[in-house]
Image (cartoon, rainbow, N blue to C red; front, side, top):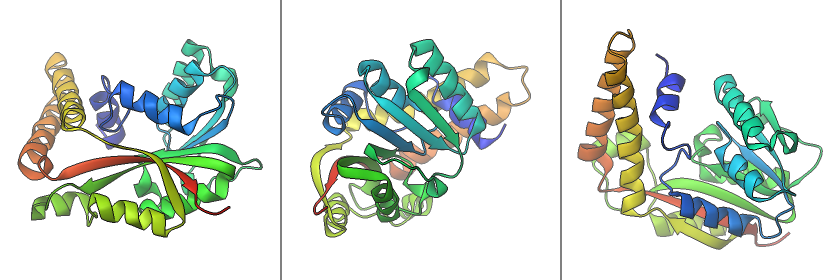
Length: 245
């Protein structure tokens, strides 16, 4: 079982692949899409859950998603047909960093996918290229809420704290117009959901050769969370506008 298959099973009950509940997702989309008829781009869209939710709630919206995963994009296409929004969604299979569009977008989304660009500021630089005048960026990034353990730093790298993260964004020429810091409840629900879904799949498929691997992965990941980064990891979403056009 490869990493993509493990991720798909782990997110069965949490299709937003970030520690956000449904109300938080809805509020972030409301702040990012004030008109309801915008053009939206998701860089690193995965199964395009952000776009699907936005399209379902806004009949005049049009969206495009970019991802390298054929499996995820196939799932996104199927879900778009089921929700009746496929005519307003275009999916591109390629590296998000290499995507080029002839038309700009009113909202560019990259939540939990900044690794595809090498970090938060490179992600914002990529988003800037696609942004229409007056447009917005919805970005999600990790930060250290408390001093991390060496094990946590080894897993997630040299993250900044919350204030420093926001300061870096502002210094890069952006103004936050809305923000959301994931609550302890959102963070815990996400982790329990992911590793619980993976463990349940393993227990439901005892004859599957991948079952033992899935169960071991769920056990290891849960332990790393509880013992390694639960008390220090934070997640921030920002809705940004360019400070100067």
